Length: 198
Image (cartoon, rainbow, N blue to C red; front, side, top):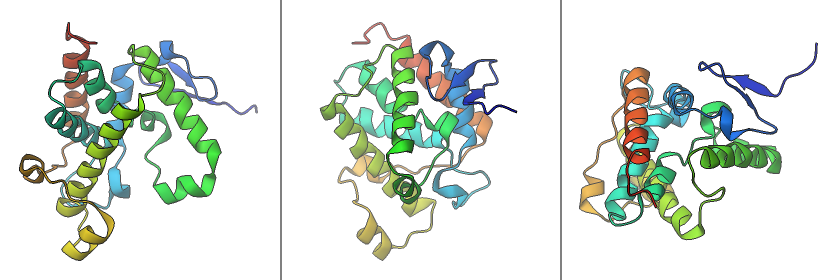
């Protein structure tokens, strides 16, 4: 039996992980995959796992709050910042480090295909990447505090609290995979249908 390097999606697409084609990327597949992948390895409170789709929506909301006048395409970049995880899963940083550069290269190939599919630069420009990473870290702080059980001492040791009151007041909420999937697709539609994409 020969080994395969492609993943079959519910849309019927086959995404070749070694040579991913933008033509095989569909937002419904991304949303379904991300809504089915748990952040924090599922170690969060609530009736539902806190999904990567819900996390992505929160990151985009924080990014938007901090960058209200930036082009819509960069909001889409923020929403899709963990897009490759729809097929590769949410691997914790220590595991990525243990695997070395191979996994990172694979992740970058899938992420590039997603970007090309939605008319984004293959690589996110560094100033935008830094802003998205900052929003990602703010989201991680909120998730650690309200969902993952970190106490105040642990929060201070491992995370940097956002300074904005509007962000500190945000509360990440675990929702069903169906609700996370639908919200992700809706937000993606709002961003890609915006005539001001630049």
